Image (cartoon, rainbow, N blue to C red; front, side, top):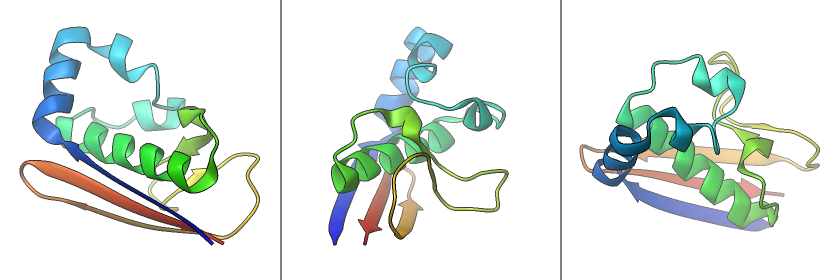
Length: 102
């Protein structure tokens, strides 16, 4: 079993998005994720999910992990075998994700 956890400042992500726009988000969001409204909160959750997934899997390509697929699955992994569990939470200042891969 592998576990990955990440916490991110929503303010930090907001600052980066305001400064770089889609140049920032294109580096790690999938096409499906880009279809949603790119609020700082949503981008922060995506970032936290991807970072936690990377830590749990050892795969360094953030686009291998997608936070939700049409709102039906909590995490979508391409080319990575195993059972995945995800917990995501956010407050005004932070987003956190925990991923468990069996």
